Length: 358
Length: 273
Image (cartoon, rainbow over all chains, first blue to last red; front, side, top):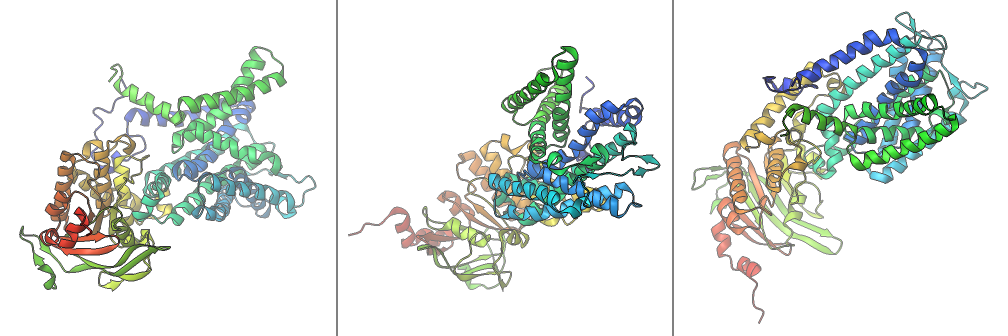
């Protein structure tokens, strides 16, 4: 009975266009933010941070980025892992070259550099579409990983070929390096996620979002109403890569601390993020979060149940986990091709009418 | 005969037809060896409803595609706003004030009606990527100002109740109307309609006719349309171009065209003896 639009009159177009038009949603969102910022940091421990919350938050940014490109603009990309690597390595180079500059600025600059690289690899999108474009982005994936492996300058010629993040602080709290606390790492990632999600939402509800969706739904019609296809696609590539780059930078500097490119940013990462947005819902901000949560949480959950509760062998559980995940992905695709976000939409429709069926 | 007056005239029902706004001069369009359009010239006057008719395969849609920049004619030129138009991409043509609808509906199926109509406003929206990302005052103001125009068009075409419905859920007739709304939202100088009444029943056709007349009347939009329903064409249009096998066989008021022997032959066939 709480979930109603009735009585919530919109008197201006700006109000009609807001992110959470229903009052209940709005308060729910603020309550969630309050808990995330004010409660979670005090109860968080290392296990929760490194197994659940940090990967969820960082993958959410990557999923948001890929969703802008694939879900909103319709350009399939398999280069996400490569672009995350660009973010990570830019961040590393910036951190070592300018140690006195804040890590926040480094992460943002890393995003900017990735946007430039994404722009470059987005150029073929004008000529090729669909699966063919996916193959072209696959080239980006392999080329970038090869580049970071091959050229010593990128990892400062370290003997192991790895890059590792030195301790850096934000507002007096150490957020990177081995001694950083779980709460600080969590908070820096959360702050990035909140800001990035806000940016993504603003972009997708405005004229840029409409340009992207127009290109996705019918590029000929988009062109006839005045959308420059090259500009629209390239802006989607740039914005998407910025998000992916930021997530790569955080993944390296805050979450892992040390990275070997082939292992962390390989092709499987590209597929992982693609699965997230397909399961979560293409063309949906909420879907990006839902998909990231699903992919990150499910293995943890299964592992806890199988190993923790049933006491099965770890290797058996690990294999079963992969099989279950695959099965669930297929099940979701058959039952709800529009992803988890669609379930949420249906639920909201039902809630609005509850307790009446129509 | 209206063409003798240079600067326009009044129609019988009191609408003002202005000077020539677009002129096609000796347009020839070939696809390899196939000649789709052969040396066609005609003009479109400001504020008029100009019909292009002809049997199937006559080259009508190709003509529209030449105007909207999809096809580049091998010969001839398009004079628009008093000057020769350089070769343009379709999106540049759109920015130059020409909007169109398609024979097969070309809406953005994944978006709501409102968003579809708002895409028609894209040419009028200038705020940059950063301004929108941070939702600065300028971007917000622009969004609201353009929403007002879009809502006016939505009101005008009586689709208020489906504003927030995804287009994919709409029936055919409404989709056609939404497509018209999207084109109108661009506030075009010339509106090109490719078979706006194809596949509609009588009531829907009547509605569509009324909307086309109202658009022309209230916004003063110049309209060029392709249509197969002769009743509609004869009632709506001020002047008609008739094409057959890529050639122009008639041009004039509906009455003149109806009396033209070549046109009658093209439509009814002629005995070869």
